[in-house]
Image (cartoon, rainbow, N blue to C red; front, side, top):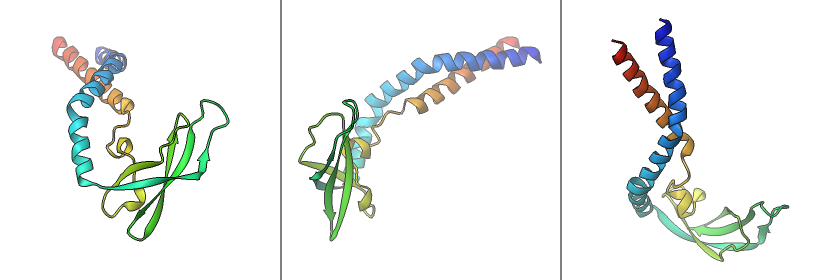
Length: 145
């Protein structure tokens, strides 16, 4: 029983350590094999709208590294909506293209946000750590007989 507990503990620790390079590998493979196709499919299903910058809404942060924020106004049908954009530098575009799913006009997003291209390191790390821990535990159990 003590040996079983040691196997579990060692597997978890090694899984946590090996999870970091495993997460990097998952993110790399996701960027090559999944995202390009998912982006095209998702944007093809969505509606696009052009949003214009509201110059009166531009706000800069108090520190140099704080993001600049501004609102963009867009219209779908007869309704007006606003989209809040953040930027690291002070060169907000006059017009941007936003995407929304039919029936969800109030939640339009830019292409980067809409396609789910945000970093997923934490999810990838958890998956990789669990996989490494489970594999190592299986090896331990098989060798122990």
